[in-house]
Structure formats: structure tokens, C-alpha cells
Length: 376
Image: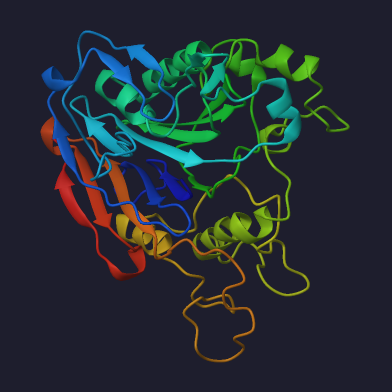
């Protein structure tokens, strides 16, 4: 699904909480109704079967209670979307991202197909990931490890970004091809902006292959890159966005304008965003993955961003005054086909049942409001 994701570290938030939020946008020309559900651990089946890829996966014996946001109709599978479990760990899955031809050739996506008369199941995807992860993980880091193991064994049929959070930290994972991944701990003092592209612009392989303090990846990632000549930089510095991401004209209409607007809102004084001497423009490919905000961020600021439509710029799709020639040129964050927004705010509270708040809004964010609910 086309989405926009915002992550806020605990030192960048107004109250010391971690916050993860995502718009789940329906496909072009569609609307996917969603619902909110509470699922008891004893009701979780012991085997998972994907509707889209037909893959069957045995599940752990013990599952925790959790809340999630599945499709209301259920005709295409569960698509649980996001949620929080009894251990106050949150997952949002997935942000559809993009890749390039070299990566796809080196590690093809695992798609449902026929070999003669025999059906060969595909891998896992957005339909499945929240259901496969949320009932079983007790920390954000544990979520990264579990998903990495699932990707290695079953693969995936699409490129995805997945976020995990608890009261202490946030981890962001990006899939690479059919079986590989990289994951990075979000620094505590930053916000992260994701808009349907490979996002990470730095990665410490030395850490990932040693202490894994802030970086985790597939165990063969170094060899995978070297054998398939994926790093095209002249100095061999590793920028994951360059190595694994897309470099298309469509990015400059659909993806980069959204991150440009977010940074323009939360770092208005650091850079110039318009005019001939702008540091960053809507079509800039080097917009940072994360930034330290100029002011601490509240849930209401996150909602504002996830409802935005380039207001205050010439690209405002609801603009009626002044130069209207650029209206509709760029894909805004707030669109009419958003199915739901969830924001998971994990606070350090003595009473654990009160520590995690789920903010939820259904439908187009331009015209709705968030409701806060205790996740427990």
C-alpha cells in the first residue's frame, strides 16, 4: 500500500515517549475499509495461511493479546496493519518501498507461481506481517530478529518497511529483494520520515556484524552486495538508499515531495526549501532519512503532517488563490483514499496498562480527527 510513516524518538517527543505513526492508503482508485479489533492470545491459530501468497507458516505456541486494524471485509486476507500487544510493543506494517533492477535480479521476489501443475507458494507481505509478528514479540529489537528469520526462511513478494517500538526504542527495518533486510535503531533525538522509498541513508556494517547495538542485517549482506556489485559509489561508502533503492523520475512526483514538506515543517530555519538557491527541493534525492527537530513533537503535530496537502506552498491541492498552475503536480500526504491512521505512543508509566496510547483516525486525514485509546 502507498503510505507515509513518521517515527519520533523519545528525546524528540514532547513527553519522552516513543511515537510511531503511519497512514495506510488504499490503492489508486480504491477504498479499503478498516476496523479496530482486540484479539485474545488464545484465539490466535497455530498455523497461518496467506490468502494472497498461499504460504503456510507454523506459529509459536504462546501468543499474547493484541489490538490491530484489519480489513473490514476480509476478502483479501487479514491485513492487520498495525497494533500493540500485551507487552506494550507496537508494530506498523508495512510502508511499501521501492528498489532497483540490480537488487531484484540478485535476489528476486518470492511470488506465488505454478511449476507445471504444482503450485509454489509465495513469501510473506503486508497482508501477513503484523499477524506474524505482533502476538509474539516482547521488545522492538525482538521484532527485528523475528522478521529477519521469517524473511530468510520464507522470503517476501514485495518491498516493505516495517517499524517496531517499545517504551525505550524504535527500530526500522527495510526488506531488500526477496530474502534480505537491513534494520536500524532510530536515534532518540530525531524524527524519521518515510514516503514509499528505501529511506535509510547510512548504515554501519561493522556494528551490524559485531555488537548489533544500533544496526542489524542479513547475515550474508556483505557478500550479497560484493558478489552482485550493488554498491556503485566511487569511494565504496555505503548509502543504503543508493545501493538498494530506486532512482526514478516517478520518485520526484510521488515520494520525495512528501519528505520535503515534512522537513520544511519541522526544520524551517535550518535549510532553504524554495527558490533557485534552495538546499532541498521537492525533487531532491538526498533529503535526510532523519533529522533533529527544531521543536519537540506532539501527537497533534504528527496528525497535522499526516493530514497535510502542501498547504502554504504553490503545490497545495486545495489551493484556490494566487498561482494555481502547480496544483495537483505532486502527491500530497493527506489524500482522499487513506483508510486509517494509527499513532502508537509508548510512555514510561508505573502502571503498564496505562503506558501505551493508540491514536486512531479512519478515512481521509484532511477531514477527520484522532481518538486516543489506552492500548491495554
